[in-house]
Amino acid sequence: MPQRTAVVTGASSGIGAATARLLAQQGWHVVVGARRVDRLEALAAEIGGTAHALDVTDQASVDAFCEAVGPCHLLVNNAGGALGTTSVAEADDAEWLRMFEMNVMGTLRLTRALLPQLIASGDGQVISIGSIAALEPYPGGAGYNAAKHAVKALTRVLRLEMKGRPIRVCEIDPGLVETEFSLVRFFGDQERADKVYEGMTPLTADDVAEAIAWVASRPAHVNIDQLLIMPRDQVSAQVVHRTV
Ligand code: NAP
Image 1 (cartoon, helix red, strand yellow):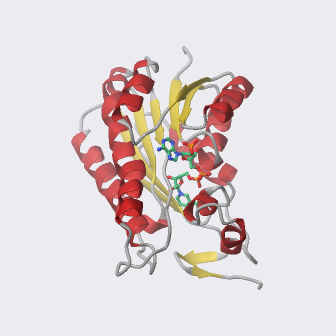
Image 2: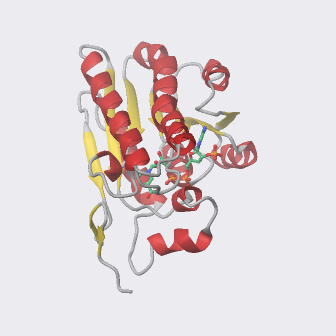
Image 3: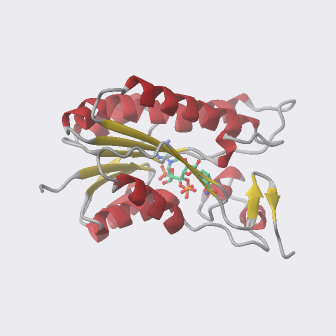
């Protein structure tokens, strides 16, 4: 079988980088995208993949990235994240808009642009990374909750609209995963980010990558629609067993 191509967005860190590594190990040609090109190029060299700059919030960047992709069987919409924990009463418009741009519009832009190639492949797949935040709202999470709920809606609608087409659509919703996610959410405050994982064992990026690679490697007739994955210590969005 000729080598199949997977696109992984947000592959300069965390879940995206781990997914790119694992898919490459499993025989995929992986095209990685993110804004930090130095990291991407090092990763692409390591895994024998291809790196292209990508800012999912910028349609021109998405167009240039997708033009360079060519034939494609798998799109992993992973780029995204949270910004801040402000309440609804004190919501910051810029944070909300940015979260919608990177999580929702980013997923829409990449999916829309690559759908023709994915359909033409005869066995295409879109895997979007949602979050427990797409299922359970929590105080201080409104902007991120709303964005990931929107990703869920987009993903469900895509699944319905692709009825009869050779495309599988999946959403994977992780709980706490120790990556740069909290550092970004707390605007570089390492101490605050570390507290999120204090006294508990979070998922690793590799744990989520394994789930993504598993979903991607099911036979063509099997569609894993949704997966919720949490650490044993996390029993719901904000209920976490901690030893401290
Ligand atoms: P991470 O380590 O912060 O990685 C986020 C990735 O997204 C980075 O590679 C970043 O790359 C990329 N990204 C951010 N903005 C982008 C943009 N405008 N254009 C292109 N790429 C962009 O966090 P992670 O935990 O791996 O997050 C991956 C996904 O998992 C996100 O969708 C996140 O919401 C979701 N998630 C994470 C957790 C968790 O606890 N960690 C839980 C549930 C869901 P650049 O900065 O180089 O562009």
